[in-house]
Amino acid sequence: MGGVLLEYYPSRLGFLAGVWFSLGSGSSVLLLHLSDTHLGYRQYGVFERELDVYDVFEESIELALREHVDLVVHAGDFFDSPRPPPQALRNAIRVLGLLRDRGIPFLVVMGDHDLPRRRMLPPLVILEDLGLARIIGLRGPEKATVRLRAGSVVAAGFSAIRGPAARQRVREALSRLASARSSTGSGLPSILVLHQGLREALAFDYELDVSTLPSGFQYYAMGHVHLHYVWRRDGGYVVYPGSPEAFRRDEAARQRDRYVVVSEINSREALSVQRLKLTRARPQPVYVVGYEGSEQFTRFLAGLASVLRASNGKKPLVHLKVMGVPAAARQRVRELVERVLGDRVLAYRLEISHTDTIEVREVKADRPAPDSINAREILAALLNDRELAELGYQLIEILGSDSGEAGSVSEALQLVRRFYGIEDEGF
Image (tube, rainbow, N blue to C red):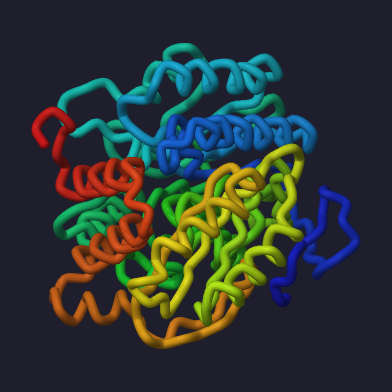
């Protein structure tokens, strides 16, 4: 079986675009795959951003119902914290009830954000007790048979593995998974669900690569990476759907649109894969501009204001970097941005560069300009620790804004706590 990955591999989904493959034998299963919903996350401390997270999650489940899928697979970081706010739990219960009422299973693995740091009950267990979710790999690598409305599927996976020697521990978990005994024989479609990083998607913070994933699965439902990727693996697909919302500037710059993925598989191969665009994700344009004086910058802002508009009733969240600003002009830049953009956007993230280099460019959301300096590479060389370098880079991204908002500091502290496994009370 061969072919080139385009955008769609049509089959039961009925799209006449892409490359056709034979259906193979046996009954097929239609699944919707999402990950990294981070329910409860309030980006930059803005309340509307928390509502955005709930909105796109609900849209994802509505798409599952519209496409008449047999099951929904979530690849981790369902909640943003192992202590989600009550409104996050309430939204999860309400929306997942739509699936339960129609007999559609919701499979999930725990991401690092879902895992409690001490001997606490993971909040996902509450959803499982209510019959709203089935956690795969709660107590270690697991391979289980999941009954659907028509037929069954084999689902395998384990909770996210992070920290020291993560790569070795992931390999050991996959080895245990390979030897795990499923309650089924052969002949059923099979799915591997992991919340881990792949080398092909991450520069440093990865545990596996596509070629080292175990064979024998028709669909590899991946989570942890917030951008959309698809690879072929034998007769199956390895897929990151990406997060339903962009949570950092670099995510918004590299991928403007947000997706969930629908795939059809049988016991031999993946028959199709289709990404579905989420229409309720808040627009987050990213701009980089060189400062050439107050008059030039005012003209730039006026042009920017003329193209900024709400999408689906949502004002944009604008990321703006102004380069080459003299120290004496910094306050003037802040005042101009607030005066021109303040009423036209939900919020803006302003970063002011104090270098003497002037560069005028706009970073397109779907095709970012390459960085002249790779900050990740420099940090890795200085620290001699790739995981620590990635932490440092993310802290730079979060704290790099000139605005110094309290929300940024809180977000940075949460990142450090998660990295070192420190509870809030002890920090």
